Image (tube, rainbow, N blue to C red):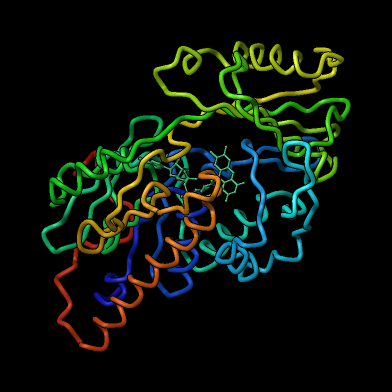
Length: 373
Ligand SMILES: Cc1cc2nc3c(=O)[nH]c(=O)nc-3n(C[C@H](O)[C@H](O)[C@H](O)COP(=O)(O)OP(=O)(O)OC[C@H]3O[C@@H](n4cnc5c(N)ncnc54)[C@H](O)[C@@H]3O)c2cc1C
């Protein structure tokens, strides 16, 4: 492999929507892409599971007509024909907004992005946690990774894109030359956690798609999303209801077992829908999301804190205060595309200006055995 090939390697941390979008774009642009994901499967906040004959997101997601960048990405990936648009009722009233959902769920977008990366020679390493990003003498980066069995290895690359939370970025980047003020600003990006539970019920309980709970009640979730009342029962084998609550990780509920949380959620749900019995619940699943929603985000652009290193984190994507802060896919896809444009433009500039290539002999995209180095 010649130096020019080596210059174009990128290590992307996170296989959520941002990481996979970056991976797809850069793999298509000829970069050697390695995506590292600490979970065992792709999707991040859009992770899904199989329910009956369908895939279903662990947390409720839908599309909006004004998600322009996201819809353009979906079109680019050839899965727009799988979207249907539905009328919905929010808080008991018919909404003027249609909501979109895929045949087969968001899994079709996630798997087509993953496929595109691997089809272009990239790879996705699952169950691999990034512990540290450090700078190499030649200007490249070394990403230290840990496997569940504690085996360590490193990935050397020219570019790094980090897509996890700002907090995690600060933890893994302490050796990098990032201005103290920028570190402090990123540390001040605060997050609330969420607990999302879905139940597959024998019967549909409500035709209301979205129901917000009144603040100050003792109900442990703040919204109910009747997924199937809007998108149909598909192959789930029942109706799907999501109960989503916000919390802080210091709240006692955060460390409760999934079964205890489900009991609490179900008891509160039963107060609202008295006819429901435990035997009506065919299956359920609780998901805890540590960095679910940004509560405070920086006013300055911190997406490129070091040369050739980018942070593509929802926490840095500014949102319009009129929007529900959760509707962030549009912003994360836009940010991912912006970062990829910056990287490809930089490579183009280097090529056109024939800037002498740095000595990059150690910038191998191959996995290096860290434990023996
Ligand atoms: C309950 C809920 C409902 C939502 N509904 C909607 C909706 O309807 N519409 C909408 O537009 N948006 C919605 N959102 C927001 C949307 O989910 C996010 O904007 C989007 O999925 C963010 O994708 P991402 O790739 O930036 O981040 P993530 O999905 O968080 O991906 C980051 C990935 O990085 C990995 N990672 C982190 N640290 C490391 C490490 N050290 N090593 C290796 N891997 C690491 C994580 O495991 C994760 O997979 C919702 C969010 C929540 C919480």
